[in-house]
Length: 277
Image (spheres, rainbow, N blue to C red):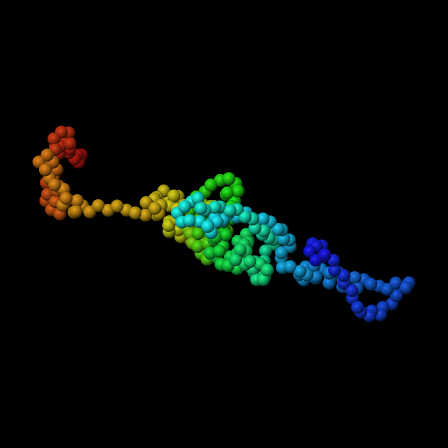
């Protein structure tokens, strides 16, 4: 049968071999080895039918909902109907996106693959980022959990911002342009610090982990802003009233700063003296 999974092929070799016969039996050891080599070559390298690397195909159904608005009236919800229909799809075991999309019997627009590396190599980094997001959302939804989509988008942006796929592990963080303190805070702490000391690596403290280690404010969000007070403008808008006897010294005049009124109490100048004994 043409659609059978088990294909049977018969190989016959037409050749004249003049060899000596022993007891009327011809030595066929060389012929058997040739047939075995041809058999392995056909099985492993020659696709008899179908597409290379696609080992199996399963027919599945996919349910989709569609709004039927052919006989609808604008701004009337009752005239719209929601229809659910099923579509038959093919789920393949194996990857070969290029040949599948080039097949005349395949709708290349609705062809998908869950191999992120293959999508990146064939369709580019933006398609790889989109697939990363979709796969993460599917895994989280399947587990019954919820994570805001912005967190997933931020993670995917970090993994694809350099134009290549960067994994979130110790191999991926080594490829990033970060300092040794951020690298050692993830994994391989001792090795990263020893390597940074040997090769005289410098950390500019621009990341989150390095600033936390140093006990200082992170240079992001509210920590990237400073508040400055214009004292001259503040003095201009202060109105001195009779109830407010506050006097602001002229700091530009040093004579006013040296003229200090004598205080009363225990902190007077008479209570202090120097002894040279």
